[in-house]
Image (cartoon, rainbow, N blue to C red; front, side, top):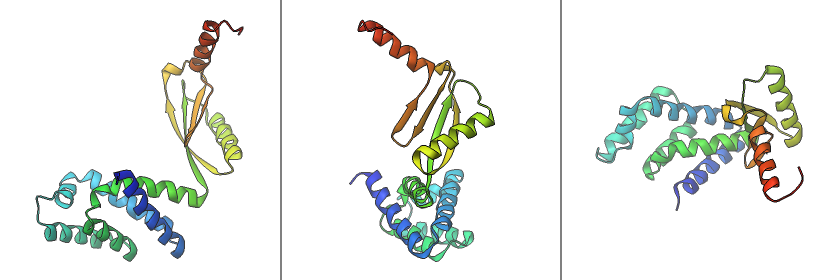
Length: 183
């Protein structure tokens, strides 16, 4: 089974528990915190992930970290289950999937907004409100800048791409001219 499918399955299981006990946001921050710690502390990551070290020692290290972080009983059980099943190395993918599922549960959609120049806060807010109205969800916008766009914006929400860039308009015009269509 592919890693992403396994990660999705574990994330779904955790979000179901979070829905049931009303702690989905708590689990979101605990899981993200653990992932962040493992990303910052490469030695710790190696100590837990590397199969060269004895399994019991690696598990004890993980348990110690969980206790020091004062994670919830559910998160402790979840992380130890991942370790026992040999899936702890998937924690980053599980976290990515869980964050998306938690957003859906909250009615939040994440979108990226790419522009050629820095946009004013008013323009960004207008775009965010339009996207929110279009999707029926609160929108969290990640802003990016790409000089190659020349002008305009490109917005991505999941699989949907709204491309209003001058670069794309010029490309479309060029293709129309090639086909002999009037512009």
